[in-house]
View 1 (cartoon, rainbow, N blue to C red):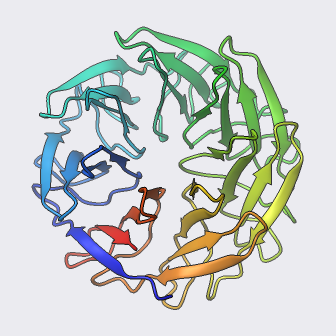
View 2: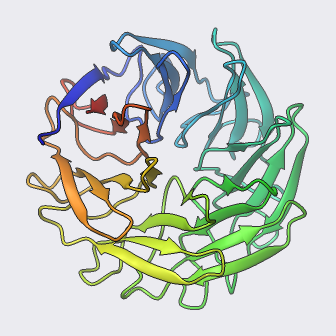
Length: 358
């Protein structure tokens, strides 16, 4: 059956922002919330809301200090409609921030990174627990300047749970964390590990960190990037790598709770796409959905579906205008199976889009 892609919003730069890298949070009314890395009144990025019919409102314009600038990660939403995210720059030390934005746009800085010991440049979004604690990663900083796993309370108290050392645990974690019911955190690093091609790791609530998998390049892939992992009810983790695999164009992989790693799909470029920066989203049947930044019929990205056994289908090959191009952020899925995602370029002003795919 043919898939129907609809552009909900095409970014214009000011006031709405441009270049949305992160995925979305979605509320019970179907509104989408995201960030742009550029644009807005100061050209330092925005927090925006897009309704189910495409009406887009700017909730916050970043100014650099104290609120931060250049937000790359996806937002997370709590039961009261408050949004939480990170910026990779700005704040008091220009090393990034953790921020809170209410549904009406009031923005508070919960933490401003200093580099050491807390880390700097948090590219990924946050994981939220039932007590309001937030968990994330920084790409650099910490005692080895290779990144950290941190916890920030609802009042802003920030603790370093783990500082990366490169080998064996990995270095430079760009992606989000996923949290299980016991409070364990799972994520990826883009570098480090035994082959310096990245790792899948587990960090307990007290900071004990275990390497579940160290990437080798072929066949498993290398350099797992933005937006992290998705976890199923059996504890299996699913993610993407931007390189490696049989064509060196990236993979979809599965890692069990004990670390056994299987390649579900190795990208070939056309028609399936290549370089999947974003993480995955799963439906109730265990099918996985994601995006590639390159490849497809126009070489500007695809939306794909991979089954639990690895069968991969292209749902849409991006064309640039009006649908967008270069989708770096993860998709989200609603109860009807409709997918929503951002593109960083393309659209009517070539500044990115918000799309839905039925």
